[in-house]
Length: 287
Length: 159
Image 1 (tube, rainbow over the protein chains, first blue to last red):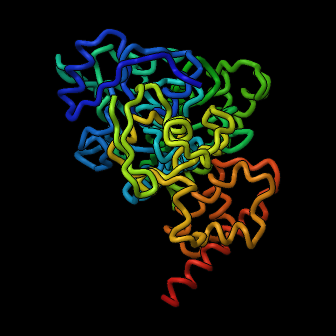
Image 2 (image 1 turned 180 degrees about the vertical axis):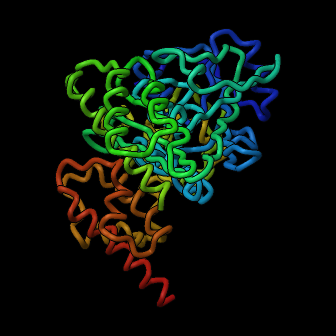
């Protein structure tokens, strides 16, 4: 399949990329391309210009700085899966990374690109919601940092302006004793999630401090089950509290019936996964 | 636009349209038809090649993106008339039936055994989970990749 014609640009620096984005009409950023190229081949997208950021140095770093893990725009899924920093302190990210797509796609696909694509069946959006992450958006006009919940607007729609580049994802270091996990139901490796649930729990003095819950594939975007998370705050981590959070998260989801399952089935999976995820996350926090 | 890609150790320069996919560049411009097109939707792994040694799907990358980089296809496995251990092992362990997925399976296998010289069943199954085979049921593919690891380790020990 051939995509529509486009003009190709390969900036060598971020400034050159920003210059291109601010001067070109109908330009898209090409990062890993594992979502963009398929939709271009299917002609769902036909941008006039592609700005390939893959040769820009310094965008592929994973580093802790201040109180956050910083993931550069070109960090690949496989890189997250292999990172010792991530596996040591960010169990939610470590659990999600190897479940994304398949090994070949993970070698090219990027975290930043996946977030900017904003597929409601994408995994990273839910993970970042549960982790309380933010994204850094830069343009020749300046830079702004935005919580991921504001960034993800609707299906395939983000708050990114046409002249902006997502340069970094910032994931706060979980505080206190913490745990997190990503549960994904998929028909086979590489399929989109039927349902995905991201959970991160931080304990303080044995009670729950912060609990973040993100839902994949059960709405027009990745959903933060904020009420369910808030219901846990200050509570003892009990089975009853988890069950209640599961019910609230299921109520916050709005799945559609499709080839992967009925809406009712998916809502039930949300409930079970939230409960199961919280149980696992608290076990990790206590270990 | 003009690109230069090192394919199987040889620099190849061509003038191409930016929208040309890497797999079409290999098959139609360079006439290296060992890289197959299966699903053409990033699902099956038949088009797997190594980009600077890392397996990727060549149907989901533009040829321009490979400009200045190294690509290895199945045609690049055999050296000096000798089968690469991964090829010899697929032959020996009967790791194929129709052969359509085989170039991709061998390239993924080669990348795996370079990183992990004695992969378990699970390691192999994990590594090939992006490559679909509709004939074998995978049993002999897993065995072949493990045999290739042994053959490679044996060759390294005697050299």
